[in-house]
Image (cartoon, rainbow, N blue to C red; front, side, top):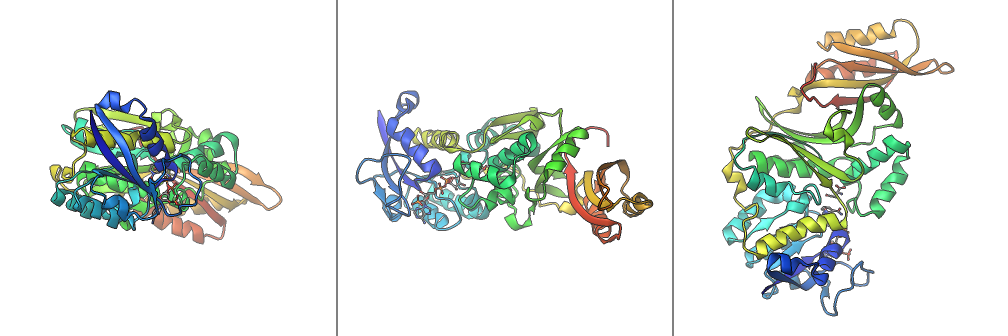
Length: 431
Ligand code: NAP
Ligand code: HSE
């Protein structure tokens, strides 16, 4: 049986699970016909306690020892961040090694350059674990679904925020406490603002946009909103209206090009995405031949992510095709479409003075912006302060018009605060 030597860059949450599986073999050699050998693992702090016991001499604080070791043929980058990951991946490829990475940030920001380096070096750069944790998404898109012209990808692709939103919704749990749990469970990024502010999902949808639609979007140009404004009452009101709230990432063909967006959305309770809870991820793919397809599973955490990483390692070690370095050349590149052209229904929650004439003023602002109201519900009223929560659902409207109306609503004397403006995901229902 052939032995393939693997070097790790990073031995944190994911790196430790990958190392453990390689050291224990896990039946991988028997199933794949290739024996993996852990040759070296680079970390930042040699004195840190690890979740895996490595044989003596494998740990190093110098990543160059991994990248330059002639005995290592596959480098697995699990450090995270843009740099030094970019330089190390480039060096590893240039020095003749295949690279597996779970690092969505570097792949979203510098993926084009890295894929070029891989192509020039004739080596593979594969990164299934960078999107959807343990859920196979990139390989199916680049292999099994290659016969399809994809129309849209819509997904829950951040486990941390889905875990937080699920617990806020089901238990009314406090945001900060739940975030701490997500960190302890190994779901969150080293800096969890990457999760809660939507950056992580932006990186992942950028990767999907490049792979499925050939669109290299600058991450700064992708519409991004995090979950910070979602309150327990939004779940209650959404539920009364037949929805739940999810952080949605989408890449959709439009007449103007590819619309990429990340924001919290109202999702109808009767569609599959509404029941994706905890750290689970789900990707809805719509292809012209296959129709709608749903891929679901654990989107974060050490073992599910190690599953995706090691799937790539074994595929490359066996010399099989993975999502190669030329995938984007296979599809026609779409330009990035502006968010201002997005059309959807909206949920508006505002705190208003509870007095006659308020509704007329709010309705006038929306009407002037060509936004038609579907329903208005006065929710919690506070008699003492003379304020009430107004929840307005609109018919489909243009994003540019809604943003203009939102600015005017904020300026009305009778509106104390526009607390939340959420988009509603469309599933072909009446608008
Ligand atoms: P982590 O626990 O923070 O581990 C990062 C590891 O990289 C640590 O071992 C750290 O060393 C090492 N490292 C960081 N900078 C380094 C440097 N400059 N030189 C040498 N070593 C360095 O992160 P993680 O959760 O395992 O995530 C790793 C990657 O996988 C990230 O790109 C993340 O986005 C991605 N990912 C994570 C998950 C998940 O569920 N956690 C899922 C999918 C993808 P020390 O231990 O000494 O600090
Ligand atoms: N922090 C990421 C998440 C890890 O919560 O989804 C998986 O990419």
